[in-house]
Length: 70
Image 1 (tube, rainbow, N blue to C red):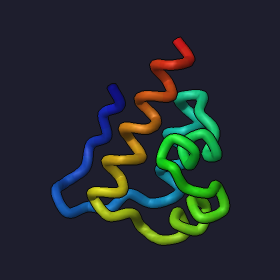
Image 2 (image 1 turned 30 degrees about the vertical axis):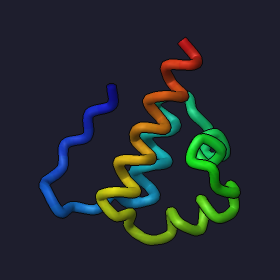
Image 3 (image 1 turned 120 degrees about the vertical axis):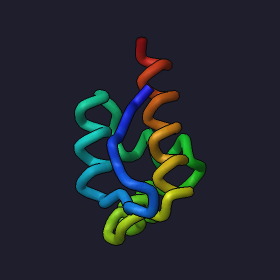
């Protein structure tokens, strides 16, 4: 599982999402597909900090994709 150290209420930035995806060998379009959204919309979503709920969904998607690749 991906562990990200952050304080409650902190938001996750698009840059952090991109770094995590790269570190875990996952493409952004794969995350978008796993979340059920268009990759263009996902890229636009990353322009602003993600809410805690959205960040949790993204982390879960990265976890699932990483597990599928193993």
